[in-house]
Length: 294
Image: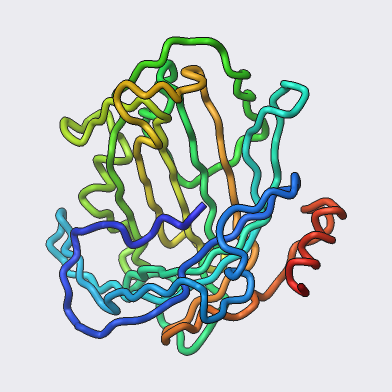
């Protein structure tokens, strides 16, 4: 699952300086399945590189204050799990480890903004909620901070149903925390996307799954950034590929190590910290070691 950052077009360029960062992700599930690019574990000349504007400005819609946002390179790794239907037909969890590299937009005045070189950086928590056409849970308001429930209702196995669409909101927004004022500075889209039922436009007739993700970044335990993204996944009108209109699934991931840095391709390092044996199975650990040393 790629980090959802730097997607909001409400910013204007204040400096034409650019920064290049490796941009990739890799997931390894306990089932042995891999998703993403294996070269994300140790970037090389084949790893994708993206270039972003180094500095942007954002004007608060409520106060008129102009903020500077700086784009840094970032790399994170951690663990997660998502709901699956097991071979025996029962619902269960599929655990995974992940590594992601990319960009992070940093609001001037946010926790940890003033650093030099390379530092242990912002750790993120992400939840992705997927809903079939007969489930309206993904259109409800999202809340922060992200509190991981002690338990979830497992999704039901696929049930026969005639494919049909549902209204699905399309939006994305962020909110950054400013230390001096102790206030959150949201983009205009964040307010609408947080409670999407207030939106009048950007509604899709979704024949796939309606998705909502919320993501939180914290620096040394202090929350510094929040992001919301709503979209229709793999849904075209009249699609005959819709398998479960009662789908109601969750994907969770949480970083346990991170670096941030401020120069080209600086997010290539192997990350500090590490996965513990209590977080992943011994079999998965052997597979990971094989990936790193082959």
